Amino acid sequence: MIMELNVTDRETAVQVLRLQQRAYAAEAQIIGNTALPPLRDTVGMLQQCTERFFGYFRDGQLVGAIAYERGGQTLFLCRLMVDPDCFRQGIASALLDFAIKQEPSASNIIVTTGSSNAPAIRFYERHGFYATERIQTPEEIELVTLVKEI
Image (cartoon, one colour):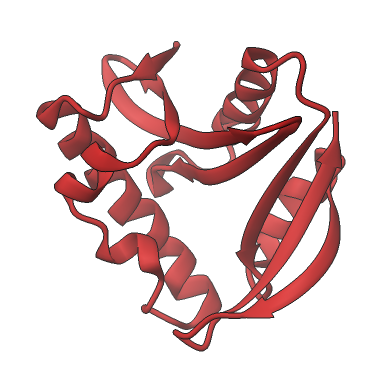
């Protein structure tokens, strides 16, 4: 079941942060760099962010989440995370599809991921995204920006 999350609620923010730490630790291992900014987030930072969050629950447990911001006709996908124990079970696809349906008037969606995160890049490409640019972060992480017209 997918439902909107209120991360201003401390307990919800704690659940999201636990999931985020597990998911981004797996990405850090894939790209070989533990300096990913999401790994430095705190409960307070999540509570103050302006992203819209949705969670995927299985047996009452949060096992996936997606967060985005809307700017004009564009959805900026800020986070897409799945508990590593639940990888390759369709959770990320369900969350992405759900988020897109929440914003029917949006015309495109933009996301960034580590350029060496081959599983994430394959996921986005399977969902119609294409790479538009590469950027280097201050943490020495090369990112790729992907876009999908919706």
